[in-house]
Length: 234
Ligand SMILES: NC(=O)c1ccc[n+]([C@@H]2O[C@H](COP(=O)([O-])OP(=O)(O)OC[C@H]3O[C@@H](n4cnc5c(N)ncnc54)[C@H](OP(=O)(O)O)[C@@H]3O)[C@@H](O)[C@H]2O)c1
Image 1 (cartoon, helix red, strand yellow):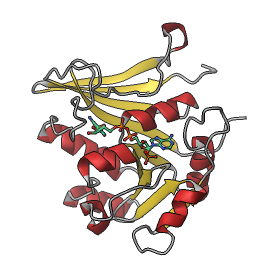
Image 2 (cartoon, protein in one colour):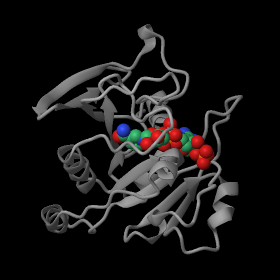
Image 3 (spheres, protein in one colour):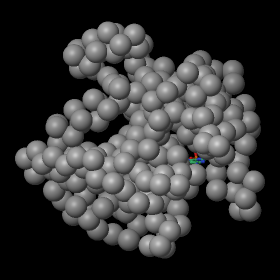
């Protein structure tokens, strides 16, 4: 039986050699204004935006919906002005001075029961969800199946996954990515340690997740690729 979970869309920008950041894991600011608008458009369609703690540590902020047209679109669709911004962190070790904590967005934390205790008596998060670590030895992180079920139960139907590579890998591992938007940006970053779209241990080509191209658009020097993930049973 297919587990009940939100529809998930991963949205990422990468260099032409497939890196989502440089080897210092600096914030990825190499996308154009068109790419930023594209990301905001995707976020505006979502009930929630999920991102890994590494992404928050790199940027210190989340991308809110700020375009008046997109805010109006959300209002017309009966959605709250902002989707919930959900940080995924097993350790819950996050710097409370990040600008994220003063942004006008609803903040949720996804962590372990131990991590949840660290933020329990603070106003930093509107909602803290705790799930166990996976039972595998060694654990591969939080039980994301459980997390997605909880998101759905909390009313989240459309989730944008804004990176980074570790989080995307953990969702792909449980076949929980439905769509992928990739912006290929005109630069080369290189470096063996620079993160790519998918962290973790990777796939052998026979077992690699397969994609179906839904659309492609070139705007100036960037290429916007929209894929659907083939389900394991496809
Ligand atoms: N190009 C783009 O569009 C784009 C978008 C986003 C990010 N980035 C770049 O990506 C880099 C950050 O990526 P990253 O590889 O560090 O990945 P990440 O997924 O953002 O962060 C990894 C951390 O998130 C938590 N996490 C993620 N998945 C988890 C899981 N399944 N279970 C438990 N915890 C989980 C863990 O936090 P704890 O250690 O706290 O437990 C883990 O250490 C940055 O350099 C950023 O600039 C690029």
